[in-house]
Length: 179
Image 1: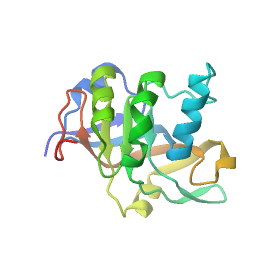
Image 2: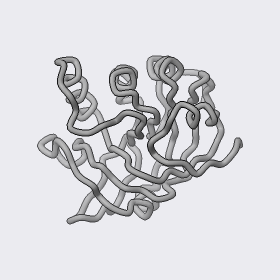
Image 3: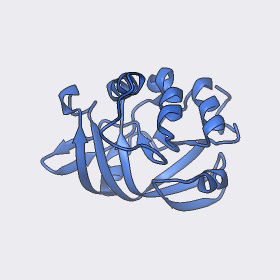
Image 4: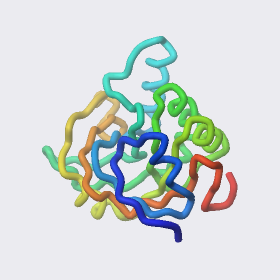
């Protein structure tokens, strides 16, 4: 394994270049859950010249559809990231997103965008949704709830969310087999 880092969810270029495939990361700050429908809606707005109602620049997107009861997240396990492969590269390019968190790895389109735009892909252990929920300290907001709770964009505050494993870095290194 690589080094261990405790970092914020808003990353600058210098922070991203310190991270390498194999590193273990614990995240603290604000993150945005986004699954298939949220990616598609965001790109539709951006392609049309509009602005998103939230700022992803330098931020972290978590491929997750959290289970929310009242104002508490009960479970927040990752969903399969490859489902977002067709749109992730463009989302990184258009929003200057710096960190993607999910499970199962991503493909060559995303890897190329990570290298071009200085971003990383991390994985959170599948099946650990209750553990992830313990790191969520609050819900800041929710956007596009009409897509359904799992597909909505939840803005979550997290403290020491991890362990997250850098599996694709900004240098093009891949911890898993090459996509």
